[in-house]
Image 1: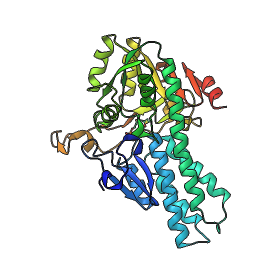
Image 2: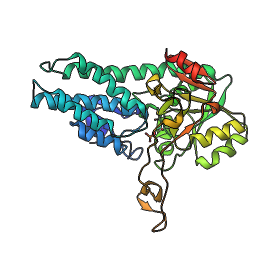
Image 3: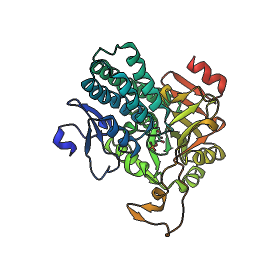
Length: 353
Ligand code: MRU
């Protein structure tokens, strides 16, 4: 459905909307060409939307899953008002299988489970679960605002920055993680321009980051990620600023494939790397990034472009969609609870204590 027909303002902060008892997602596969919402009434379709990238970005996936639990509870409670928990558990398992790397998904489902545990089978679960999903959503926005402030505070003088993928309002409940710092930093006169990697193969940089920043009148220039090292070599970029899908207990950071390459190039050229992520992205159960499950997607995503096959018939492709940047390449992890400089296990444990 056309966004305009719903009377919902078309902007990146409205990518996930609970409207008229339904979940609406701004279809991120067709932006910026079209602004269309898809409405969801079942957890199965919400899980499929996560898998198919209608919604993407770690915090946004978690928020969507939380609303997916509300949809599931409504259907299960209507079908069995005094025995909805077993069916709901199945639905939550399905939501958990939608994508493997962003820990925010599992974090949000665990939070919803915490509420379910306080309810009896004879209670109506919907209003309490909706309240929790909305709280998860609002807390994410508040965390992003706080991180925006803290991250911008690390930037000493006005500079250009480079970002990878989309860690903006579209990828979160609103405002963004890495792009939250960009928004705050630009407003404070510390960020003059954003250089955005196009981010093959889904083009989150070209299609989403550039769109979001343009809407906010923040100067943005696109580059193919292969150009990033040459840009860093020119000496005009002060910071690499990225988001994350999962951070291990030692500060290793999983993020969109290509982040590691960018961090290596940044280290070589003496450019600092800032990772901006809420504590819901930190997984203290994994001692290092080696244990983070990395999603592999269909090789067809690499072998085609804009719906057209570009790889020769019969050629294969490797398509891991995240990589792990070792903590040693990260200068600062910015969370809503504070900043960890030169992260290691001890500092991460202190943050999460
Ligand atoms: O495959 P995607 O688009 O879900 O990957 C998203 C990213 O890698 C983001 O950088 C990350 O989720 C942080 S979003 C605030």
